[in-house]
Length: 144
Image (cartoon, rainbow, N blue to C red):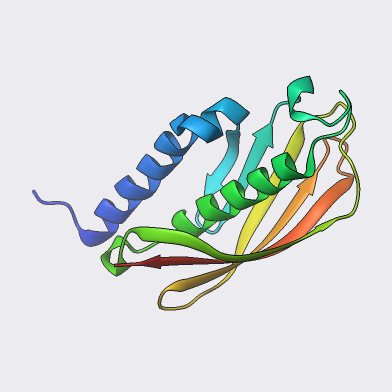
């Protein structure tokens, strides 16, 4: 019995969730999935002092990396692989509005809209108490 197109998509989407944390940079950061559902992803960055400016507050580049990775995961989480598998971030706007002080960083990404090649996402990063650290919008592209 052969796999349906949707079964193939589900298998490939899950492969993204399995492989992404093993990518060298993402693995080094220590990002883990809390939620990986179609168009809704939550990732956690466990607190590590070496990812901060001062031993307390994350470096902005670390926060941006988590935002970008979480958004990319959300883009892939409900992707139809018949539409391609080459991807890149097109644009990201991040507003840093707070700080996670000696706290894990939680990042939630949701798909707002899927077009032919472009996926539009909204992302929020918080500390473990739910205090907002950053909010962002991203356009991600997946093509053939």
